[in-house]
Image 1 (cartoon, one colour):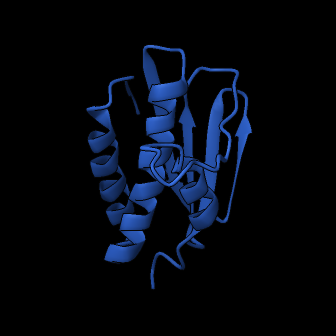
Image 2 (tube, rainbow, N blue to C red; image 1 turned 90 degrees about the horizontal axis):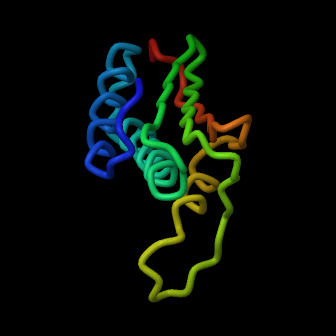
Length: 122
């Protein structure tokens, strides 16, 4: 899906994520919440740090329970894992992605991460 680079669309991305996971029979609340968190962080980074009017989101689930999240911010820059001060209001998004995702990276203008959530049929 593609949407305007507007912070109000982060919630839309979270709702779409829950729907896609549900169609893949991934309904465990903790798992859905973790995937939604990763989507939120990557989409927020794309909106805040990208340089385009739109953001692309691709979410895929395979039969082995691997979820791939890909967010295109149309930017040549790469996200950084920062070490914010305790009173900083932001700067922790990529720390969360690093902690919860199996792996993450950057390809072209997209930041991606994977998360193993177990068999979709389980």
